[in-house]
Length: 311
Image 1 (cartoon, rainbow, N blue to C red):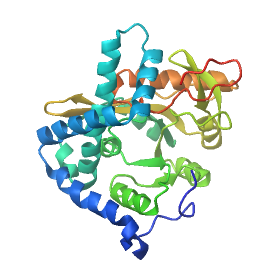
Image 2: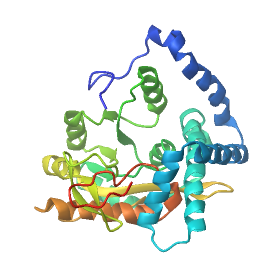
Image 3: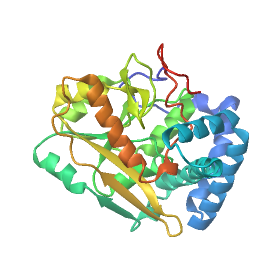
């Protein structure tokens, strides 16, 4: 995806955003914004309803989700896969409101967050090292970044939106959560932040083909796995650990952050072994709350010659 703005530049407001082609987005903002202040029970109910609508409407995403679940969690019954799949979509619907709340009504999360593994992060900081936090595409979206900010100040690596107004809007909404938002193509800035002993959240859990990675098992299935983090660690000597956040209690609600110990002897000289290690970390984290993950991405779309097609 090409960036709609120069690498180091922040997306800026433009009077072009007042043109009629952007009115739909403005309308969406005015309709959605008040929901950041709605009671949790209302947000949750509406989120689930939206999730069910999307489950029915987005047939190809639904199919991909069910395929991923069948492949990664073999041995369940068909009704169990259906229930898990619907749960993924409902969590996505709830995640929209969690992100809205994180952006516009963040105090809502006060007293609702706990953490395990903070000592791993503090240890790396005591050693004067930058920290690369390997994350996952959780349905909590930006609410996860806000949860982190209760304990430390993260940077985030992101993909700019194709739509310039959406890009500006999301960038601006995230501004209070992250110290720095790093365009995923801006490797120079990413390296500099790690060398400056910053904490960077980076999610290498999607299929970007084999130009940027290798085939390594994910849930026992060969998957194109990003290897950029190996080079980043070699260049910066940053500590690398995994970060995951999830909703622990639906009724109150309560959120939990989990940080794993820093990887030792990483990277090795074996690219596939390192990719396997990071995938295993992701699996462990993902299994803490399986249906709060974005299973609707085609994680196994890259199939080199000789590999069975999954979708």
